[in-house]
Structure formats: structure tokens, C-alpha cells
Length: 193
Image (cartoon, rainbow, N blue to C red):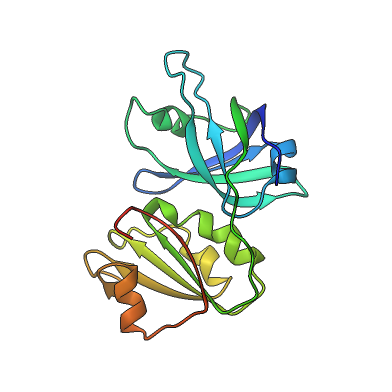
């Protein structure tokens, strides 16, 4: 089990990758050294009015560079995520982590299922799993993010709520439509999933 710690992280880069979705790389060596797929960090705003941190899943872990990638959705002015989206390279913020238990890595044929903002934590898992994997991603519409990165890691199946790409519906519709099967299921996404 990894040990959590609070530290000052420095923004390496930040970019908008879809509507209200941002990708941020952070220099956070001690946290990156301990992190495993499926964990998250708590990110603290620099606004003293917001005392509670925002839990954000780890999208990628670069142990060699001591860096973490988080991909998050801006959910409103008062949630802290808007402030994060305004940060640029060189800015700093407090983070705590790694938090959570992470995914147990199995060597069996696997489904990696991500829906909405539950998609990002599946990327590092896809990179580290050494087995046959089927990656099923659920989006609202054709405004998809991280798709090219996932295609490098295995066979990708898409479901969109509006039917604009892949199967119409949710990830379960994509599984049924493509007659997929697996021995292990890894999933992250909204409650209905």
C-alpha cells in the first residue's frame, strides 16, 4: 500500500482537450513514485475560501519524470475546477496522494470500461495491464477525448449517448452489440454504469 503525502506540485503543462475537459501534467515526484493505476489525488485550490480539496483520478503516471497527468471536467465556478483550468506551466498547488487502493493487475482477458470522466483512470491501467484487453469507452457525443492514446493500448469500442459514434447508448450497449466477453472487468464512471 502506498503512503499518502501532502506536497506542493508544479504544473508542467495544461491543455483543453474537449468541451470543459482539461489535461494537466504535474511535477509531483514523491506522489508519482508511489502511485498505481486507479488511484487519485486531492488537489487544493489556491483560494482560501475553498477549504476542501477536489479528488481527481490519475490518468497517467510517469515515474521516471516524477510526473502525474490528471484529466478533469470543469464543473462550475465554485467547485475549484474552474480555478485549476486557469493554471499554466510554472504555477503551483498543493496536492495529497496517492489516495485509494488502485486496481489489482490481473493477467486475464479484461474489459476496461470508462464512462465520461471515468475514462481517464483507465488509460494508465491500459498501459500497465499485460493481457488481452478490450477498452469500452462511453461518451455523451462525438466530442471524445483520449481516444488516440487508448487506441495505442488495445482494441477500443465506443458508445455515445446520442449515437453519433459507435454504439448508440452506453458502454453495456457497446458490449452487447459487439458480442464482447472477458474474465475480468475494470470500470470507472457514473453511477448508472
